[in-house]
Picture 1 (cartoon, one colour):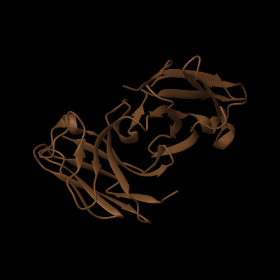
Picture 2 (picture 1 turned 90 degrees about the vertical axis):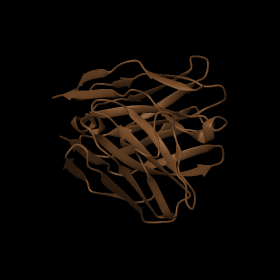
Picture 3 (picture 1 turned 180 degrees about the horizontal axis):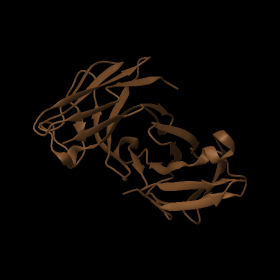
Picture 4 (picture 1 turned 60 degrees about the vertical axis):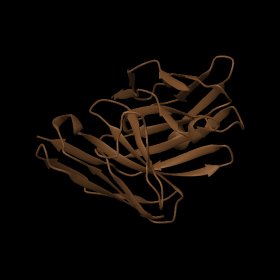
Length: 116
Length: 115
């Protein structure tokens, strides 16, 4: 499995500001994803980060709020824009590989965000 | 559309006793199923996966799960709980023929292990 790192590991931010989270993988991967885990909740997919094109967002998530970059096959960023306390969550990136008919994903350690 | 339901939000066992975490799924096609574990302040780790091969799947740390199509279940078991097993466990379904193999997470089951 790939080794995935995220920066920062945690942050406390003021409302109205923006935070960019970085995800670095130690090998080239085709599929990268960003998830949100709200306090005490399960994981929800925010978007698929596509290399060389715009990210594909899930219902309820928009590019203006969560812009994503994917400049190459080992790196991606997620920005949480104009933050409010409701954005306090753990944000996780994952990388996936297609093995036959299924998609196996490995997750980074997450970024714990608190918005005051 | 596919979905997954974890039947217990919290399970408590004593150390050395068996663990059973229940999961039911709904999928239009033969799904791929996974169990992930999340220890406090840690990322998610893949425990095991079912991908239409053997119905009894063995994973890491002594865990195993059995795929039962007739019951649409994929329960996670371990014969003897260890204190280090205390964590949040997620049952996950991936339907390769819908939504590009997107992972759908259950709500999670928190496992507590008493000494």
